[in-house]
Length: 150
Image (cartoon, rainbow, N blue to C red; front, side, top):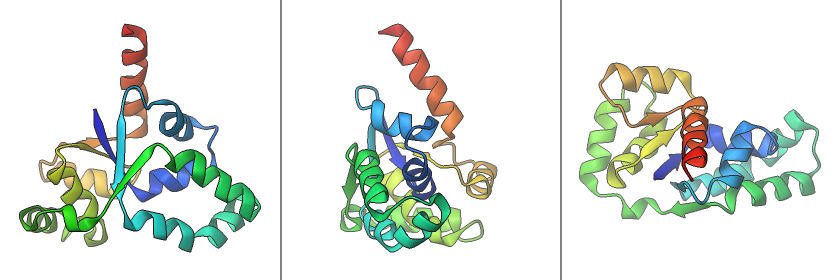
């Protein structure tokens, strides 16, 4: 199953790589294929100072956590997204959260679910009939089912 990972999930994983999100990102490669927009790598680097302030971790610890979390994510450039998916995504997010257009365009292009912790985004998209969404708890339960069946 291919899953699109948004920034808040990756940041949460970096901040607590031993938590539920970290566990899912680090230990689920036999169950899921994680993808993310390429710009997310740059966003992470730009937030190192904020991540350090929040977590009280050193630069090296943040870098190691980033490595552990991101080694299981395939980053894809936005040039691979067809224009029709950008247009469809814009229609969905324009009055919810326009800065999340990338995630919806990628989800549509790669026919996968978006894993997000952004409650406003999830609620807004769900109200518009967009169902390709996963919360951390939903993904964790799916993994538990898959683990039991193997």
